[in-house]
Amino acid sequence: MTRKEKIKHVLKNPLWIIVMLNNRGLHLLGDEAYIRLLFRLNLNKRANLDNPQTFNEKIQWLKLHDRKAKYTTMVDKYDAKKYVGNIIGKEHIIPTIGVYERFDDIDFANLPDQFVIKCTHDSGGLVVCKDKKKFNQKMARKKINKCMDKNFYWSSREWPYKNVKPRIIVEQYMSSFGDNPDDYKVHCFNGKPKIILVCKDRFNQNGMSEDFFDTKWRHLDLKRPNQKTSQEPISKPVKLEEILSYSKELSKDIPFLRIDFYIIDGKVYFGELTFFPASGLRPFVPEEWDKKLGKMIKLEDKT
Image (cartoon, rainbow, N blue to C red):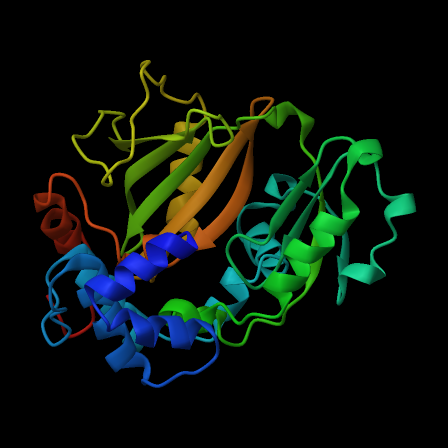
């Protein structure tokens, strides 16, 4: 969100001031109160957290009530590799070149010509280097250090991130990705894969497309607001059954989990684990899908 957009938000509803202060380190509200505020501001409705029915309401409920220690490991971009590798096999993990406490600890002279830098504790702390000779180390340092100074938990109270140790990892750049790798995001409900989101052309100047499918690869009339769908049919991936099998293993005994995969040279690679897509703060189109997806999540002592 740009500075101008933020000002418009505040003028439209002064409650956005609380969000702005929160994001600057002044945490005026506890988790539940802040989650209710974000829900109201982003979705223009009150969150029913006593008896949640929709997908977005249940995601908020899970933030507050489903807090298992292993979730911290699962969202840590370094620790998650070992966790997932032990379950589905280390051959499905993108190789790590190094892990560091500080950006200035990275020995760029000994890195390959292509690599990826990630923060382990947040969403968005990512820098891709395709040619080390043209790599802007100063800009990369600025971006990564800004992310290192933040605790991602505070932005929307996603509890698993609260105690993730901030670190930096350098990963192998998978050259077969090209500029626009397809990303298969499997949405699992109580251990059962049911919805696959395919993200294409992520780095295309015309914008990324998002298309939802069921596990039989039927295209669903479902999307997020202002999100375009692919202009061309998306073929069913040859490795779909393998991806679904891994997703079932990884999501066992978890109310909701999204598992991201890539297929590179015919081989499946793990991307990341996500408990709260869009932090449960974006509507669906048509709106009825919010309730449809909500019914798929069975909460303990809830419907």
